Length: 136
Image (tube, rainbow, N blue to C red; front, side, top):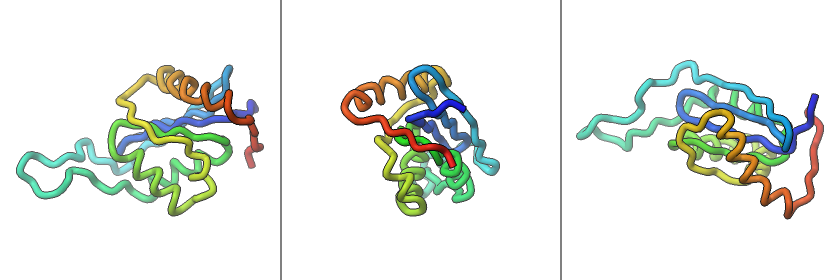
């Protein structure tokens, strides 16, 4: 199995796409939220912000897929990326330490997502030593 130094997570309230990658290779997986609403925003005139709190089981499933990569980039179009980051800080601070940034990204294709992450990490890779920890 190829060792990957980075991971990118694209997440919204219905699906999370996780890619472990290096310069030459990428391996992806998709985690679906099994109870996600199709539309989470309220209609005009209704009470509330229009955002729901993500299901803990969904966030845990995403976190379980993150064990291994040394540096993580979290991206997505809405609030779910921030909820994942907050969940990591509270529930798994060891993995949270590996989150390099949380960035807005609409709905890129899988190839565009990996390319965006490679560009993001290319500058960091030149400035920091690359340490790859083996998956357990």
